[in-house]
Length: 540
Image (cartoon, rainbow, N blue to C red):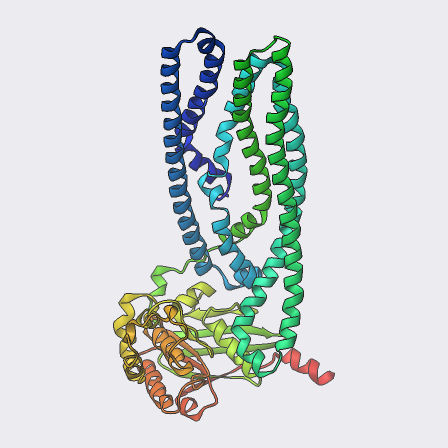
């Protein structure tokens, strides 16, 4: 997958040269200290000391400049990669089959989108860029051995023990990360469903039950987070103690070498600085292991979204004019019951879907529009079987509940497609919505997401959705309970618009028990239980 190490390596290539120069310039300070202690101070060569200090200062300034350049490059790469991943993910969600998205559940999709920002450092190479310093860490350790001899064993032993402990902790972190992801999915899904159904919960006085359910889910989630943070804090403390312990032990051991005459004072100072430079990449490598272990679930969440199989509607047939719609032994499943329909509907008609179970009829509309998959059977446009995504492109679906998106009212009217604005406004005027919207302070440019409350009624929100769906260049209109949430005065206006659409050659499928809309229907489509299922019920 191109979302982990392959993308990180691409980012590393952009900062390879600055990172190499930074490590080379970092040799200036320890070499300067070594020369000052061993040669300049004993010989009192102040002119040479001035030149060395000027060179060391220039090296430090160049080092700071290169680090700034590297951080800016990584930040820009991180931002671009994050934007690209969001685009790829949203495109995958928009073009993937509905049943695959349902398998991820609401919490899985939400966490997958949130995880993109969490692992952007891995995409851009910011997390893996510390690996560039590993060869130089070996070089610094060799210089410690060259100057201080056996003192090189101090950083090697200390960091070997530390890295072994952190590696084992990272293996456990993967398990904790999986538990954290499961609890986060459950919590996010519960909250999203709670926001969606909060009015129904309050109407039924089920606040206590909802609170109790959330309390249990949230407690498990918080315990997982607390355990994860405790283990990560312990690993970070081990890294800090290892860095501090390396310096302390090296100075104590080096002091004994200085007292015995095996090492000069300048050599001890240089070894201490070189060991500190060698410790930095080792610390980065240890942190990489911890962060990568914690990122496992985020990586899997993003991978699950990007691995959705995109569907593609055939452009040649998507614009083909509809002559007839054929349901070939289409079977829908609702709980344990199955309903079958086999019908042939010509274009330019208004058809009512009828079923004993009204919810099954509503589900039939979602299948006809490609919003949800059918149990079995086929749907043919002009005698050509079409898949879900193709039906979604050819059909305007208007559900019984409508919502609006963050943006202006005009954006919602045209579905964020400016080319549909003129047609959407025409439907808006026909349905009597235009006068309502223009009474708002900013009119059609009212930003809904920037207001504390939505200044629209349920009727206006649904009419906005109806105008957008009618403005889409589709051949079929599926509308569920068109009378729901609308004012009584709006019913005949909507009925006239639907009749005009049918006269213009569009096929209208509706589920309604309102005479104003049922009187429009020239065809009826009945969903019935299969014969075998009916006989089974009779035998029982």
